[in-house]
Image 1: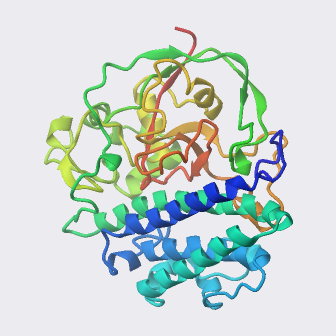
Image 2: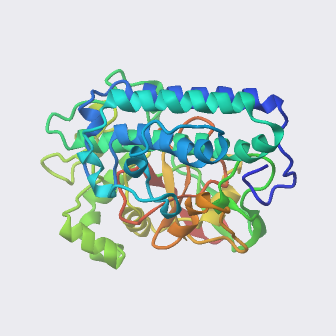
Length: 421
C-alpha cells in the first residue's frame, strides 16, 4: 500500500523490499545516534525555547512514533517498553492520548539518556521482528507506516541539528557542535557569479507529487496551476547581499516590512539574522561580521546563502531588492530549469505561499491524518532543502512549513520578479 493515495499503483510492495526497508530503517536509526554523539547528556536535555525540543526528546519521540503507530496496533504480542512514557513522548496526536506540555520538555530529566537508548533498542528489535515475520496481509498494512516512520525520523534529524544550534547559541561560550567542520554541514563553496534571472515556466503547469515514490499527504493531489510570466533567481540570496541590506538600514526602514514583521523588529530588537555577531558598526561590510554555526564561531562567508531568516526578513529583503518571493508553484515549476543552483542542498527557501491544502486534498485516514492537515493555517511554505536535511529526503514537491516569525531553521530565500526577461 502506498502512502500516496493518488499513486497509480497501490499494490503491496514486493517481499524483496522488506530487506531494503529494513536496511533503511537501521541506517536512519544509527544516524540519529550519530548526530547526537558529539553532545553530552547535559546538552541533550536542554530546551532553549518552546519551539525547540531537547535532543533526548527527539530520540525518544521517534521511537514512540514507531511504537504508537506501527508496533502497538500491528505487532502481535508487542509489550511497550514503559507504558507511562507514551504520555511523555507523544507530540501532538490527540487521537493517540495525552501528552506532556511542549514548552516543558526540557524538564524531563528522567528518564535518563541511557534509558532512552535502551528504549530505542527495544523498539528497533521489535520492528526488525515485525519486518521479518509479518504475513502478507500485515505487511500491506505496516509497510507504508514503517516508511512514514523512517521519513518522520529523518525530519527529526534536521530538527535535532537546528534545535541544538539554538541551545548552543544561548551559551555565552558559543561552543561548537562539530568543531571539525564536517563537509556535510558546510554551507558555502567558492564565489558564485552575479545572480542570473531565469524565465520560469508559464501558463498551465502541473505541481504536486505523482508516481510511486514516497510523498507526504500535503504534497497531493497533483493539480494544474496557471502561472503568469515571471523570472526567478538562479541561486539563493547570499550573506554578502544580506549584509548590504543591513548596512543600508534594512532593519530601520519600516516601509520595507510587513506590519507584523516590523512589530517584531521593534519589540525583539532585530538587527541581523539571529546567529550573526554584530561588529561595532552594523553598517560594516560582510567581511567585518562573524557568524555562529554548528562548527562554532567563524568569519561570515559573504558567498554562503544567508540562513536563519524569518519569512518577514526574507520579504523585507525582497522589497529592498526590488523583487519578491516566488510562490511555491513558481518555485516547483522552475526548480528543474537548467541553470538553477543550490536548489535543495544549502537553505530552505521561503515562498510567498500560505500553507494551504491543495484542491481535492484529503488527510490520511486514522491517527496519521494529524501529521500535516491540521497545521494548514498561519504558516508559510518553504521549498528546497538545507545542509541539515538528510540526503535523499527532499524532492521537488516537498512542502516544508513554519510560522512566518520562525528564524532558527536553516531558512533563506530565492528571489523572483514579475514579467518575462
